[in-house]
Image 1 (cartoon, rainbow, N blue to C red):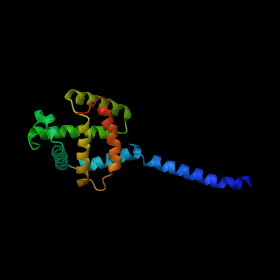
Image 2 (cartoon, one colour):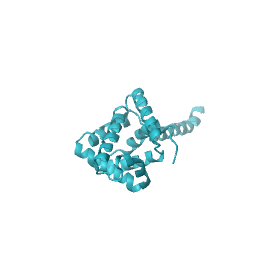
Image 3 (tube, helix red, strand yellow):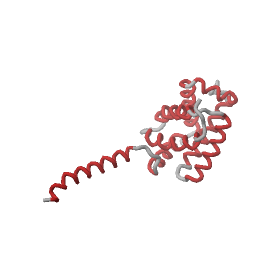
Image 4 (tube, rainbow, N blue to C red):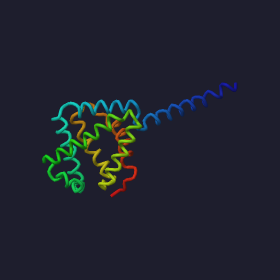
Length: 174
């Protein structure tokens, strides 16, 4: 008789465990699968051709400056006022070349941490406000689906968060 009364409790415990597992699974983490997905999609985007890289980069920076006009002030040295200038195109290549390195290091935490520390120092020296990291990623999220079929925004958000957190640990908001 005692066993029969425990069946509803066991069902309740089972449902609770399954529910918790679903919640845990839906929480965004940059796990091994997300890292592979982001790396694969980044290769589709960045590794396909220089022309594609240039179009993607231009789209990202156009979106960023259009939606965050004040951010352009941070790029006067590289002619942020004209994304078609040779100076700014060279800057775009440097920025996305650096991002390419970070994406390729997602599976090597120790080296990734070292690279993020280096970039943190650079961004601190240049006074890049924290909110522009989100603005930059919003520009990437807007642009990437134009070049990557079935863009996995969830994987990118989770893994970009690892990158952003590593660079912005000590940055202040504007």
